[in-house]
Image (cartoon, rainbow, N blue to C red; front, side, top):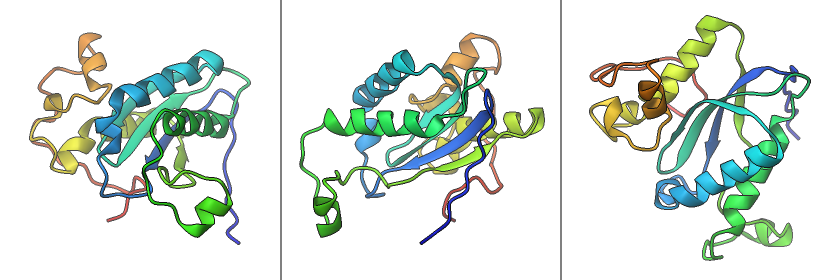
Length: 177
């Protein structure tokens, strides 16, 4: 059995990648309001700051900062995934293992997380979230992807609206190559 090691730093910031089980689905953008509702409900019950968030058809990336004294990001992701799944009709095919465990077939079981180490690491991961739709060929300009916190950051003056129009992102961010 794998030995998953997670780093828990109260009040820390993390970068996450969360995937649908079926990576050929477009469920996350098709059901964007349901996902937004699941995130909002979770933030009401267990506060956290969304530093960056991008939703693609089959996966999402986020940078979160947790409140001082709190390092429980796993419960937050469990709540988001459960709330999203419960709001959808049961139409997905299920493996025998998922049926036996009474699980839905929407999300991959785990998620990938990276503890943010310093300001440069933080900036790199926020920018990666913003540029990810461009990286996947979904748009030719960052500003054209509607499901991103990039638009919030433009409104608050963090980025210009034409930031990274033709850029490429490289590096190891927990995605399959």
